[in-house]
Image (cartoon, rainbow over all chains, first blue to last red; front, top):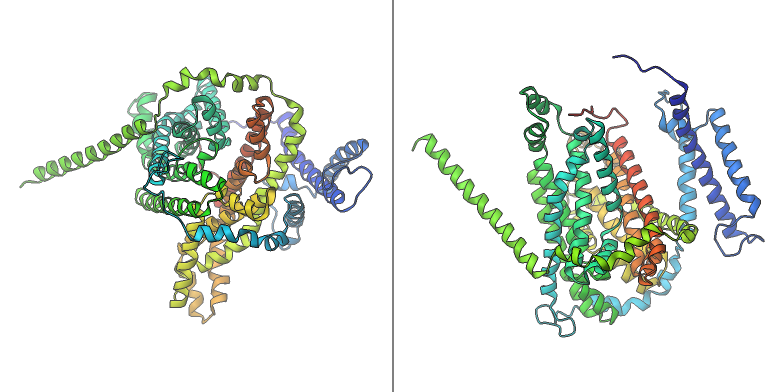
Length: 359
Length: 278
């Protein structure tokens, strides 16, 4: 194979990535330092406890300072970016922890933990101080009231078990339809199938971007969208779970398609098969068991999600949970929670056993 | 009976069995469709009701970008704190919840207890835990962290102890044969085998926690989800769209980083499998 001609441009690009990572790390150090300074010492530039504020010239100084720190660390061979992103083999001369790499990682974790502790308002005292307030809650949860388990609650126009069936059906519909839609998407999003020509590659990138974006938005947020779209109820919840499952399954599935074995593909191709025949007889049989396992795994996740999707108008058993919770009727909340825990547990167990058997 | 008859009989049995299974799932599908009034036609006929929402994508209100970025960082910290605080608890509990390490009768009781508790706790969604912790410590990021922490401890305990159960018994027996105590066996036979899977599971859990942290705000658990939900409730879609974009960027980024790092850990930083195109 001919070696590609070396030009300065890719080399520059190769240097840019480690440099950007270095700069990011230095900027993060600056961020955490400023945050900690602001939260412990009140200066004239701090207008609120613990927020990140700087004088106007401070921003320029921070940007330039971190930039030169990153430059300097590359110059003196202390760069983390080069170590992380380039494959230079250096024999270990000293213990991992006292290398540049180890020390920086420790510093990063400690600083992140420190800032995280402050920024998320962690306060262990309040747990103890307010513990008596939760006595009613624990009492209710441990004395569940199963009055509306089968009997219809007139205010909710349904019973707990009835809405449980809705919850399971929501997850079932979402998994089945999502799975069916994800199968072609998974092939469209697999590099080895779609990397052949320029035209197919466009399709590949479009599909990848589509399901990465859809997947990044949680199904609870999709449920809000569908509640606006088709109205409150279990159907909106099912649509929300469906679209999220479709994207998540397509991603898992495309990774599986990318990992298929070359042998069968070549064997089918050698018979003179077309592109479609290659996929049908070379690729599909290799991914079917994994695909079934993913469906079961997804069903499990969907049942979990379906129990809370009522929070934003998605219907299902969560409707009872949030209604009773708003009335502070902890005994009924306890009953609903127990039903949820049992059902999720059983499905988790079945799904796990079935997946073990398939894979 | 000849072999051919046997094969025929068997294949006909498989045919009827598969037909019954498919018919059962299809029947369930139809029942579910009717019970939930699941009607895709509604998406077309009701499309007008979402016009305002899609319109907001064309004109996002960038004035909330700074505020959104700060909340985003806070959300990330929530996920990080929940994972970091859950890790030590999960590590200790995972040894107590591993069947192959807990042999004596007393240990069996502890094993059952730990695994049972972990299963019950992880069956309940973090959002529900958040509601309990909001009653306890009031709204803000702290109950969100606690909710994610409880769920992470249970989930990681389960994943970790399953991993411990599947370790190679060879080194275990070798170290035991030298007359080493329980602790030495743990340090020299168990921990070297599990350190990489633990790291990988922790990264995986961090990824899940980031996703969960974006929605735990809906019930008042802090983070970017709280603001997003309030903008949606006020029907202020141009601002909600900016928040959603920020969430997508963060979740995508963390997902990418986490899966890259996990790949590196699992393959030991070695070569990836050969890629080919059809």
